[in-house]
Image 1 (cartoon, helix red, strand yellow):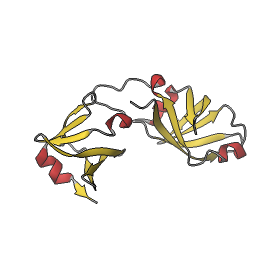
Image 2 (tube, helix red, strand yellow):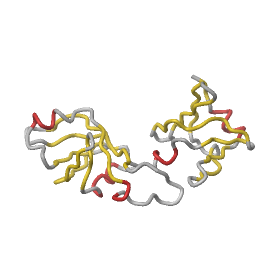
Image 3 (cartoon, rainbow, N blue to C red):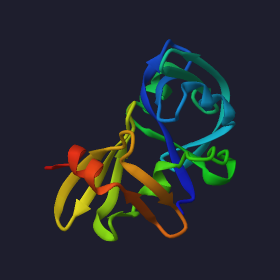
Image 4 (cartoon, rainbow, N blue to C red):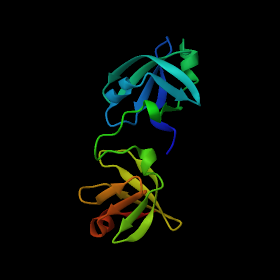
Length: 166
């Protein structure tokens, strides 16, 4: 398992006092409030304040005192240590844990997960024998996710209805 989890992307500076606007990649933007230390470019930064507005959050970080310092963080990814992250609720998973899972339908491997695009209905990206294939995690598609065995079992009929090759 990865030691760090991607939780957000820095969008831009907000104001002149070093605050940054971020796009959380968590289930709810409010989840960002639970993290007291984050990592950007491998450097730990303490979270001094968090405010949430709609689908965005605004952070004030240690070592980021003005707009110029905040500008240097534009478009960077924000990570947290896995040990600082809460255990996912039953039926919920960290994307990092899904990457590399084999997707199985009727015992046959359809491909391996290379990415999950968060959306109202997440989109799974598979490497299907050198071709990229995507499918939406719509109702009835995923039957079981077994992180320890790195497998995702899907309903073959529903999978074929919503899967596309790129």
